[in-house]
Image 1 (cartoon, rainbow, N blue to C red):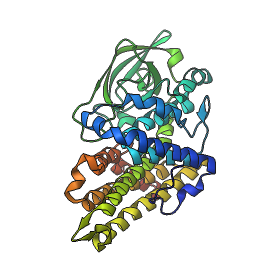
Image 2: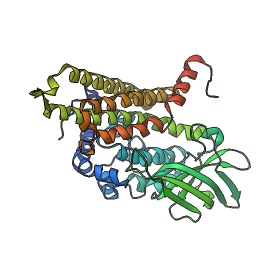
Image 3: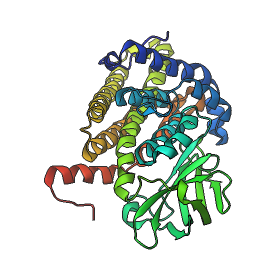
Image 4: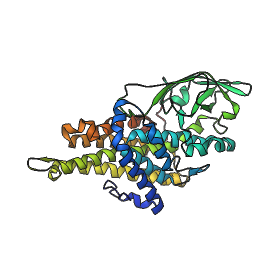
Amino acid sequence: MTPPVTSDFYELEALLDDADRERLYRVRDFMDTRVQPVINDYWTRGEFPHELVPGLAELGVAGAQYSGYGSPGRSSLFDGMVAMEFSRGDPSIATFMGVHGGLAMGTMHLCASEEQKERWLPAMARMELIGAFGLTEPEHGSDVARGLQTTARRDGDEWVLTGEKKWIGNGSFADLVIIWARDDRTDAVLGFVVEKGTPGYSAVDLKDKIALRAVQNAHITLDGVRVPEADRLQGANSFRDTARVLRATRVGVAWSAVGCARGAYEHALRYAEGREQFGRPITGFQLVQDLVFRMLGNITASATLCARASQLQDCGRLRDEHASMAKAYSTMRMRETVGWARELMGGNGILLENHVGRFVADAEAIYSYEGTREVNSLIVGRAVTGESALV
């Protein structure tokens, strides 16, 4: 069994029971032995390592916090630590799993009918069907709640979807894509499941990204896509239902930020342990130890914040402002930490073979997706002051 890593400075893994710790260590071992040796090549080429999906499926952690329909039914705390562990190995893999197991499966668990859950979730839990989540649009990100332009028109027993989505992870190869659209008659925001191969659905991968290059983010065009009423998510009838999903997954992104910081820190620390300058290991230099302290402090503070948010989620007390605080704070500290990891390594920190540069780049995407720092800060500010500054 892989031993705990030194970046768990306050021993948060001890909050898990023995069985969940073993599951967590299996994820860590998979990322260290199967992903790390190959991920730089995929990251450079901007391609997703599809051959790793069967191994990811064998870990049995897709949709970990949800119960029933083949899902593991573990705690939100365990689910968050798994997200952290994926991101510690590689943020692109963490994002792929977060989209599938968090956004797509989470929407199914929270918004689908019993029949729909039985039809789709077991295969998604086994990762035989891969999911995607289509909310963001080319002209609407932070304001998508009010600005959603994709429309849904009822036509007998079918709905006709028209519009565009952008930045949709897994969107070009997913078997099931959840599309959020506005009812052209009632203005209500509804959710639909579009199956792979549906006429009128097209997806083109975005090119030349500087972050999360192994993630396939798609620009989706919906040109009169027909979806049967049976594939409309029966519990998704307003943006509040969308927000329920985002509240849960936002904590997962916060954990991923901690993992990104941990990955950079651990690579930098191992580098420092083997690097000599002026005739001695650089770990004995005061300025290096100061950087180690700063990085570990950020990681520890963010991880404890996320752990408490997950505990609130487990007892049903998580509010929007809790999730926003965790996401905004953890991503801010992540950005600092990966920069310090690069600084510790000097010029060698920009070589992909040393891994830290990948975390530095990927941190920029994690910092912005699932709610920018600015919007999350205003959500917290509204909760504290009682005044909304969002518009």
